[in-house]
Length: 450
Image (cartoon, rainbow, N blue to C red; front, side, top):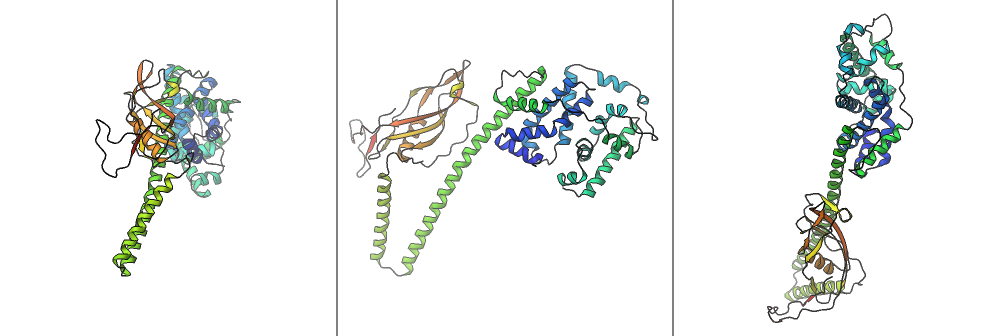
């Protein structure tokens, strides 16, 4: 069975609904029972608190992935959620119970602890323990885990887990004694072990999973039946945070792929240079005469010539991905084309030029038009040839657009476009008004733009 940390990592990295559903299924009973105790048996508000806690778990998943055990954090999050809902509803039930004389909650060491007296004070006592002690008690008495499993989860031996749990139980007993419940650690442990099990309502796990995982899909129109106005506000904030995290992760993955490609190319260049140096050193050390050196230079020239012609005879329909260019990630928020009211309209686009003999072809480009109509983050998804791809990308970078509009405001928009470039017209070298090209310069051809 996967532990909590592994499930959180899977949810953080791949947004795995299965992993998050497993977390909810594993811990929803604990959260619901803790909320029910704090809310004096109010099942409706306990369900709402459970919803809030698991939404908070989804938002904090990246920072919680290092924790092997979530029980203590979930118990603390339940406490905060209960406090928030009680404040929002302006309920004074907890304050009224705390105002009663402590003498009303009496117990003696000569008889077992009364669960009805212990229940109102138990969670407050648990809150005063440190996280390590609270985790041990939650796993042992609320999760019903044997000491063997507790030791495995906390990297302890079975005996060490038993001793630490005993010490944590003694600390809990001492705190309860200050609140008027006097007992022995053994009696307190027996009361916690025999506590009435509060079963979560049937279908609660599915309801919580559906509610939390549906939150990132849309920041508007959320109408969960069991959510108050305060909970909806918190959920909207969480949706924005999750959307930002997804955007950053996508940009990081794209940049990492570009860097890996460049690193591979650099390694190939270093290998070629090393081989060339070794060849030159071998010729010099062998006492080659000037004729041998000239022959070596001639052979190198033929290699360059053959490589150039090999690129020129590639089939036109061959998909060649050109060397990517690195641009910094887009710093702002952008929308997809389908999300804006008015899509960008091109105002100016320079004609691309390619070396003579390249021919036409197709290019698929990915880019962002910012709120000022400038083209940003151009990347080539596929191209018939490297020259065609780079030419189309360079022309697109120099283009100007009327910016996209959403709700009457200019916004940045993410675009993808497949472009077909036809080879029909050549630029006349030395035409009127132009500077004649230098001698032996390659012929540059103007390609009709799309």
